[in-house]
Image (cartoon, rainbow, N blue to C red; front, side):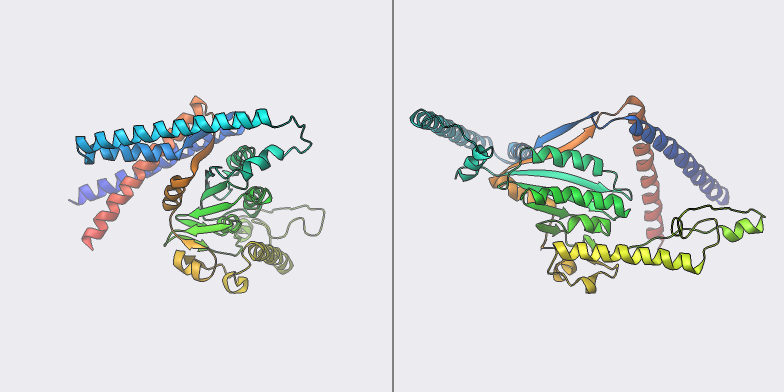
Length: 376
């Protein structure tokens, strides 16, 4: 029995090392391919979510309903489609009649046609759904800016943009750029709804607070309005091995704290001052877009779950993105917009290797966790 336990421990260590090596190799392959591609090597993938929802409904109907009911429903749908086609035909005929009756006028207003559309009482709202899954570098901002640019060519103030946001935050400048992309939507006067199903903290909340309507799931993590920075210092270790680090700068504050040299009190104070300044900017940002929030009370770096966040006015409603989108499908045309890069064979191999190994590792860790819980 002892031999089996030792062998199992050895096997787990071996698997961990192999997985780590392959993940690193896959990551390097993926990143190297990504660095070579240009912004023009991608395309928009557009999916109408109304159709997808209707397909799911019909699949369930085929299984759950009897043949007679299905025939009656099919007959009713056919009649409805026929009546709609007839109404559309009459509408088109009426529009052609009006065009012939009206005198020819050359418009000097470039927005006249768009304004006429907005005044049309039969205008059907469009909802554009985007996704942002943020890492520490906010890497998906490159995709987000392409998606927003595309949507803004068609969206009007009668439409709506829904962003499904998930992020625990990261680099200030990267998330600042991501937030600026959402500002583009506000500048066009298009309603922006942000849905958070799991987490929008720190830089994630920096983005989320720009929403006209911010919705979070009951146990989604919201907040973390603060700034953090940490780095190791190897100065004593290097001195112990007689290694000197010489740092040359021009400008008093070109470098403050360092990983390898001696950090003076003055350098630490300057670094802390920079963090404090960033925190002030973060609080001002939240105050601007969430004026009902008591920023001094919530800007402690603390986090809140959905209902708690609602009590602090950090969000506007508790709910999930699924409910928002399903409800929108009732009276709007809902489109999911995703900008995707064309991946090379080399990059696809790297991503596939990472995904497979990550899945395998997750299964091993889950099995081990179940064992521990059963023993407890």
